[in-house]
Length: 324
Image (cartoon, rainbow, N blue to C red):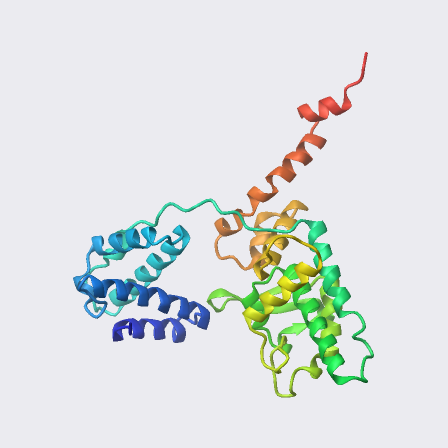
């Protein structure tokens, strides 16, 4: 169902004035369209936003819950509606914001899916094996392009894990954004916030190899760092497929998404002593609370370290006691 003009104005304001990414604007559009469709069945519309009251948003939330929507999805949709109504208030198109009176459903406890260090190394070793033989291969063009694609896949996997990037951040990189020689990459994160992310040694090497063969896939005018076989910027779906294929070849049982590598990066950093604030900066989180969700994953690891190292730990006492 088409959105009324005030909702279209809001989406344009998000894109132009606030600088939100196309993916974020598209997600907001989808949420508003779903609300508008529900309102239509209730004989209402966002074209008359001043007619809506608190209970309309509560009933919409209840409807989504009975439809089996995850609580996190319901919260996101309510957030989109609050943002719309804040905009309408700002533009003096309404006098009150009933959406802000509605609470989000209690969040499920959902832990990020991660790979352990051994699994992560197996994944990257498999990607490296697929990319092997790229250097110096110049005879059979079709084979060269296939090897170049494997080299790209290794560089992408090393970058996602080595720097903890979001998949959107990695795929939006241009060649000029990355400088392997200085071991840093310039990243445009959420809300158009730029940050500098360090590159691991293995990531630097993988990127050097990819940049040497990138011309086999990318036309001269293409700025994107990662391109598909047609020479255009690599898309999320293909990137997810590539990583899942590497996972399967590595013999890892669980489903792997590009975000799993970012989750693994954060978890391994914390397990090895990085402080929470530093990890927050590396991930580009605006709120520390977002980073704190990784701390529960490292709790078991920390407890093992504590039991092994602390003089007053009961476990250590058992390990060190002697017969008298």
